[in-house]
Amino acid sequence: MDAATVQRFLDGMKYEAERTAPPDGFPRLPDIPAGRYVDPAFLALERQHLWRRSWLYACHLDELPTPGSFLLLRKTGSPILVVRGKDDVVRAFYNTCRHRGGPVVRSDKGCVQGFVCGYHGWSYSLDGKLLNLRDKRDFVGLEATERSLNQIRCERFYNWIFINEDPQAEPLLEHFAPFAEYFRQFQPEEWRLVAQESREVQCNIKVLLDAFLEVYHLKSIHQNTVDRFLDHRGTTIALYRRGHSLMVTPNRRPDWVDPGTVGMRRIETATAISARNNASFNFFPNLVVPVDPSGCPFLLFWPLSDTTMRIECHWFAPDWGGGPPADLWKVRIANFDRILDEDLQFAGAIQESVMSRGFTGIPLNYQERRIYHWHTELDRRIGAERIPETLRVPPVLDAHVEN
Image (cartoon, rainbow, N blue to C red):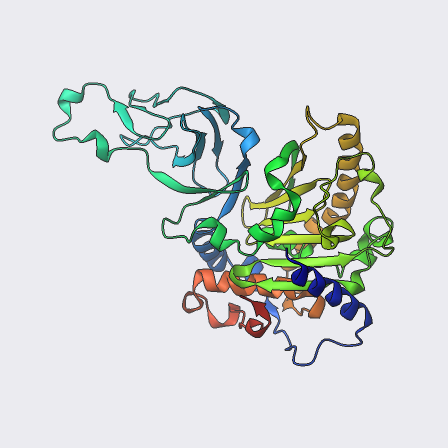
């Protein structure tokens, strides 16, 4: 993040704290139609055109420590195998034998020399090539080179691994621009995986994700936690192409330090935006990163059904040389979990409401424009022509989106 960008955010927080109305020219945001949260046909479009055509977080390189290390993911509805090859390249394949669809791994994680389908014994190398098959003499004209495991796009954002089932997807770093440049300040190659946890939540994924794209709710549900040190009225927001966004909220006191980070190693090259404020990135569609120079969670939002979801917290920190002290991180994660409990407390009740006739749509304000931006990108991914007119979100924020 260069000096001009840093200054722009600092100036933006000052402007936001002092303004008395939305900026001139900011449009009225049409209501988000209620059916986008409950209509089965719309949610089917979302599954088809969003989750299987987006760059989605898979794992950190620490989870694939040696050649042959693999993880099996099922979060998009497809069984996806992520593996570190003998050449140290991380690749992703469908966990689907090219014979009759048997799985080539049956554990969620492990380390292997190669893959063997337990159904009929077809075997594959770590880079997906078909090596051998039983009774090859009986397969007329079969070419092994044409029967490699079906590969999925798999690319790295520093040491974080992302996958995409769309073979035509643009390159990951191009897709996440300018975040790759912004993250360089944190020396992300040094960050290590600290901890993981997850919770199932009884609501549509968008019900909860919406809450993490705004700070309008701080004074209501975080009175004794986040609202004590963050000034939501100074929040400045940048909207980027492809649905991504960045929200920076100032600390109430410039000298405030999160007590949960005391004693932890901090990356000294971090800019004032994240070192003395709260910067939260949204990597569209489902990754929220409230980053801090001492470490941060990757918050992942995954749909389980039309009415249920899972939130995952993957914690990362700068390398301590031997691993971060467990007691410090135990306290920090417990503090965060209390905040997360506050965010989750209304999820089930809101889901009950959105399924009732009382829920007719969402009127969003200027502070909540990241939510509208997210829905606009969802329509772009699906294709507005596929969406009933009554469920579309008009792209009224285009003039406020940065290239």
